View 1 (tube, rainbow, N blue to C red):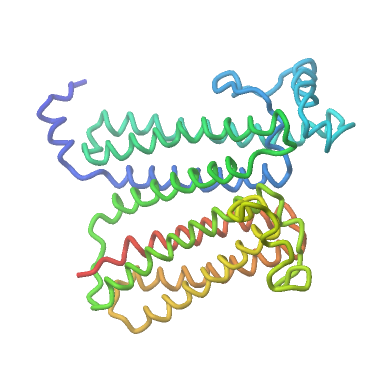
View 2 (cartoon, helix red, strand yellow):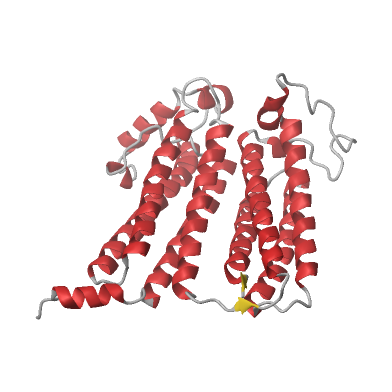
Length: 354
């Protein structure tokens, strides 16, 4: 077997990344997508506090004996969630919520392995240039930070609360989607390094407007994190009115006023509704603006996808609310939000002015 010479390695490093690198990044992004949906199910089933130990290595193995199951259950019985909400829960019922949290953590570890091992291989084979390598190291660091943030979030529910902090939950969700978007964008850059340019004079304005839509989508998703953190979807289960009013009573009941945006169930749910409807209106407006413009086909397709997915997401959100947040619909609503984000990023990447 011949050794790779320094000259050959240098030549490899100067070549553009292989298509396999782009597909690997796309696969990693898909795994983060799935992780966010699993996280939603974990939240909806109230499973997130079932594992009270942070064991990144030994935690890979599930309980293998009845004694270990009982030990973990006894730990859970010490926290307020059990004492105030689940007192009298059986060991079998505990196992149900344990498995969702276990799957959530195991999937996170698997993402780390699927990212790190191919990264080392591609780098060793000279398929990653220096610029991309730096970006991938940033992605790796963000993934490690997400693991720590996840434990920081879970720990907020051990002492005085019966749930995790809505602030930490939203931060955990936001970082997950930032990692997803970052990996997806890198995959696009590898798979389509020279996207077709749009020749229409309105393309620069459309692109700036699309950046604004991306910010709106991000804020709307973050507001959904506060809805989930406060269980705000379990009240005001009518649409478009909330308890018979467009703007619910008690919207500004807390002082100082700013905390209503993050701690008042009525305000948090109303704001999420308003942001969602605004997102749909802007997405439809941009799609109508894009019609009959001389845009790259991928960008034109993207505008239509954003508008359609935003409409579906709004309908899904309303249905989820009216039916008082069944787990399946809640998870689909999370997935729908990520699809709207994905379509917006796709369109942004392919909308390149001439």
